[in-house]
Image 1 (cartoon, rainbow, N blue to C red):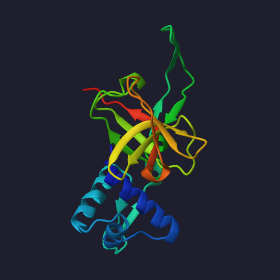
Image 2: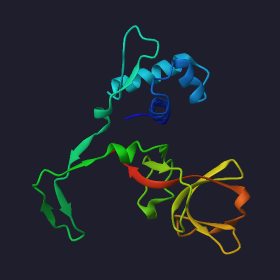
Image 3: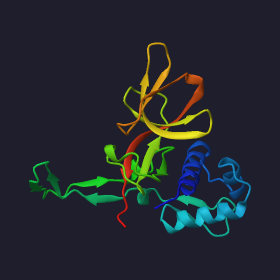
Length: 197
């Protein structure tokens, strides 16, 4: 699984090739993802090669090539499960492509470090998949930065006076109202990855 930095590198390469019709250089990638070390960029590129997402053409200046067919990772859909524990097997060879869900444009992951969101089924160690959005709806679960420093995951509510209420995911906490200029909404929660230990 790619790290956030590796995903950012892949997304930059994809956008660059789509826009220009040729691959970026290591220096252009470094500038594009805002890091100074070309050695770090080389490591990110090698990670993408190892994942089968790009390949490098020897003896070429712009030597990165996307492997589009590798960007689809499908897993079988084998059945349906209901809340009364009935299992119905599906035998028509259906599959689900999980890569667009995990590696969508500009998506990022955050690791949960405490148990304050258990009421929402979110546990310590879970990875939250989020994405920036232009339009946010009431009740969306958002990652918000308060006063430029405190990051929280809360439910969003836009009030009639244009203030924003952040609704806690833990019932014992109270909602908090903020002026819009105090908040930066980094992204909307779209899903969860739980790696069993």
